[in-house]
Length: 206
Length: 297
Image (cartoon, rainbow over all chains, first blue to last red; front, side, top):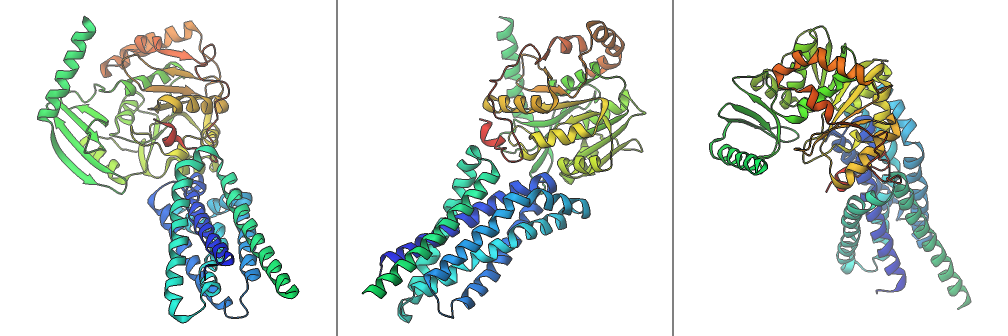
């Protein structure tokens, strides 16, 4: 039941939860120079994250129907990693453009967080339902598996929040932390793909 | 001995104030608790209910002209560095004291107050006689956004006063190199920035390094009895001794009704030119790296 592949899936789900909340937390820091630090900044960020996660759950669930595999799972991580990078690379020009076109900082911050976080968070949201699909083997245990998975990924989110806000902002630039998250989820995606192809080879040779 | 006596006086005054202070207004705003406390002749605006230590602004009810806080007085050191200001920008309203005094001193000057919390503006009007008219305006906005928009509109100010920090919390996006560069871009050629800061320990060094990175050498204004310092930055030339002396002579009669002793303040002014009191490798705070509140212990 609890083999090495499953452990890897749990660890990946943990890391995606960690990264999502780390990025969300840095969102406030990224938006502040253009849109301030009022409550509506957090309103914009949390709205966009919740909305894109909800779409991500739908999409991830749908994608898990047809021939689910660890390779496809790893691909989600790779794509997410690539989509996170623009947050570090293009945030400045994107926010400057929005700032000069929208006077009201509520809608400015909402649009800016949509532009920066919507797509990467949708893709990160796909991970949870897809993990359930890969882990569930029988119906009786499906609830338990889903519960364990939520536990692991939400624990990751809690740790991602506290470690980012307490320690990482003291040690690194915002962009370095974002690129760090992208590197983490990208390399974990690669690991999943490699593990899957090795496992397939074993099957062929066996 | 005199010090001890002074300490005793302060202690009894504090004790007395705790005993007879009366809260005449309190409200919870979007950002904080706001209290107006009255204690004999002293009326104070406070943000923290528990400690009641950090008064944001105070006023003597019988002598509203007389400034209560040392740091408010120190801010007027700016006037030794510039000629009569015409366009003044104040970030962080408090009780509106600075705005009121500057308006009385320079009735023709345009004064724009920017305050993030609408409730603070209301309390300043209702309890601290904050004056608004065609020369003095207030706007509810984040200071950073206001200055960015002002820069786009190519506005220029000859006196920018930053007073947005309270004792407990520093808005971190208002203490970065990029923000100071934005301020620099709205500063008139002969203008000056005056920043009231509460920073201590490690943050003091980062703050100094950040101001220095943008404005070059600046002036610290502080008097020993108080941990606040006012940073004066953005000026092109250090005035000569004669210039200083003549400005002190000219302004002293105008400022003494407010309890501002320019001679004493000028003695508390020190340029960083010969006295850089932070390590050369201190990290400059930027939008990318600004853990100001974590550094301020």
